[in-house]
Image 1 (cartoon, helix red, strand yellow):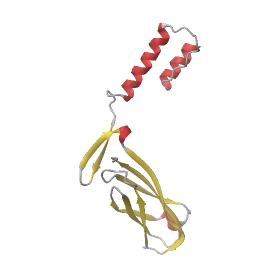
Image 2 (cartoon, helix red, strand yellow):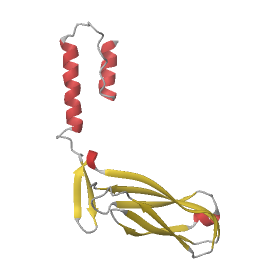
Image 3 (cartoon, rainbow, N blue to C red):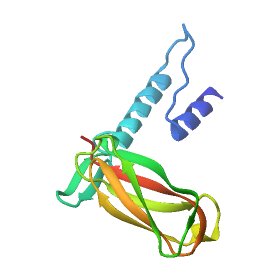
Image 4 (tube, one colour):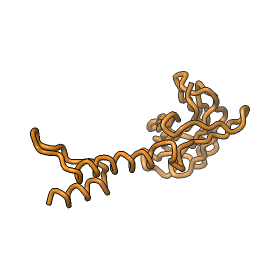
Length: 160
């Protein structure tokens, strides 16, 4: 039972059960410890195949860092809150980045129709500028009506 649980933990989570105080350690238990450490080393160590994040920056070309050194932010900014928009009108938005990036990050912006209105369903998001310190964009409303619209942001970059 203990060995079956050990194999399951080792396979799924790489977690070994802690021995009881005073429990004699046998060769099998020591083998499992070493095997688990080696498996973790292969998975996350120098021999891991997917250990880098590459960001293709506008002014500085492709920049790569180890995955655990990359900076990823999931952001949200409210653009309108129950306001009436005319067809073709635009609202600006800004998302500050508190000096976390060495270069302008890669940004994906997705509109969120928070108010679930017809006017909020038909919008276009345009990023105007992305710098290491802020993101600026606009939301264009293609249909007139009341809207409550936000923007979800996925930001991936090289940290300072």
